[in-house]
Image 1 (cartoon, rainbow, N blue to C red):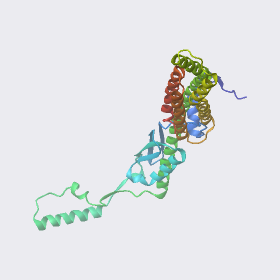
Image 2: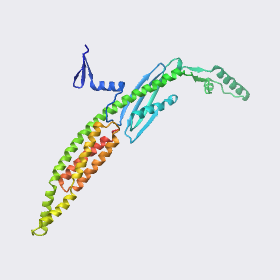
Image 3: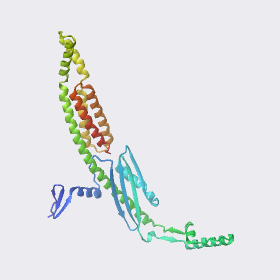
Image 4: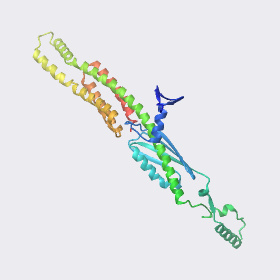
Length: 331
């Protein structure tokens, strides 16, 4: 009977061994390649290594924030034909970010990698140089450094088609491993960013609730303020209640923030829904939502003629700005 692993805190206990859950997730992600994370960061690093009998390939990826997907590949000239395959792989897995790819190819010593000396051609160059020296009465000596400068004297051995195919597969294998490692890091960071955004969205929802409570008393307070001010101006003369109610209604309509509160609550709900359920790139969509949230908070602060509401609105704007900073890092 197979003993099942026991989960203890952040470790899997298997017999006498303890394995960190994060390491297990990373191994599974990198070598299996399954990714169910919705939110991903645009920053990350990944490395992949692969080798065969001819070469050892190391591919490093790193990325920073960018509005679109921009890919830069640096690799040896003799393998430049594989650049398009690497770009295609990245475009299939990434939506945004400025990505730099570094490909290092270490050539091993084997029959396929020996250089060949064209001795008959070298002798022909030597004879030609001696003839030139004699005819022109030159004094410079002829050395190896002179002859090897001429083309085709020393050339790398022509690689077989099978070896070329193996090397191509090796480069792409290293690139795939680098991409998986890279995506895991972006996903892990994305989870942390999403958790922070959710926390701040919940704080923002509470602030909006406080604004809603405070706004319920605004019409009554406005009525009392207007009545007191009019009585002071008219030296305590009797005021028409109907006229007073009309003025209060006009002021209340101008200071009504119910519509802004409802929209702000809706934007917060949409933000949380995107974090949980969206299967596509979420950064641009969330950035637009945050802009709308900031606009509603500004409107609330300007319309509500009440100190406490203004104070809460400023707190809301601070939280929205913190959310915006985190959203800027999302793919």
